[in-house]
Length: 402
Image 1 (cartoon, rainbow, N blue to C red):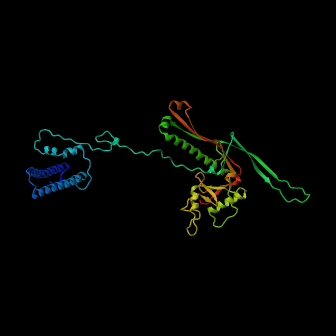
Image 2 (image 1 turned 90 degrees about the vertical axis):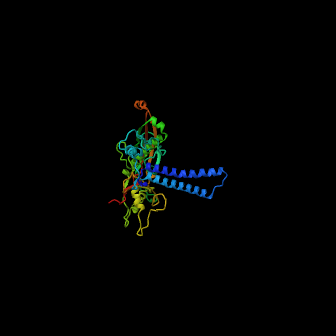
Image 3 (image 1 turned 45 degrees about the horizontal axis):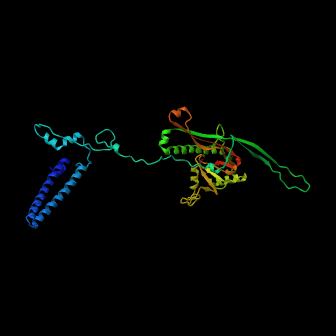
């Protein structure tokens, strides 16, 4: 039978017989050489040559047969990868079984044994060792992406007592100052004031957690605290810009800002021109601007603005300079709508007051938490916003969206 037609078991048997034959020849030569050595005779050249040939032949046979066995185990005839055979297939292909069944009238018994293939299966089956495989888990918890809050940084910071913040605002000034002749009456001017009151508003949220899991996962507590505080800052930035003042909402800067009105219209105007004219409008109101706020999409459009030769006007692809426009910092936030901008004197025109600084508290005060080993994790802050001079803030369209 050709080697390619043999099963791995038949090939293994043939290899064993071939090696035994070659090994017998080597053994015969070795015994003859040992007998001559005991008799005090030197080994003849012919005997040495026969021993070398027998050993060489044995090594060649071993190498060739090992390669055949490896190829036979790895592939089936036709080059297809070998598949794991069922117990039934292994039974009918077994050499002893086939010899036994080849008799016309088989009598007696035959032993057949098989070993299960070890696999990574985790179910209760033969050869399943998956439960013994160690899994790789990276340490820590990968948090979700977080927006960087920046509008608060533009404003003046303050503290307050009580729930109500009151301040006196100058609402009018009639300037009649003039040149006075000797002995003439001097002109009088008028000034008006108004008392403005605003209330501190609470921003808060909470979540439940098991005391057991907080004790067993040390990092979880810090993740919860940080995520809750982030939620406060997220809502705060939205309120500082867009709060409509109804209910428990702050009255934000944008609803109080002055509408953009250009002092003149430049030729071939761009969004960059619009921002410069907004600065001019604030300056004419006696409140020179200190910063710009816009959506990240709009800042990207401005940075990608090119001249007629394809050179960037604002953007520096290789640079790491902080965003600035006309010498003022640009704050990008998704809390402002696309194609809108807010330019103003943030330090002079508005101030944020903290009645309660942002904090996180843990409690088991209610009965349900106590008997179920739960805790309530609460984050809250209480803030008020004072917009002293609405004319210090200019709000308008950039002109990207028609």
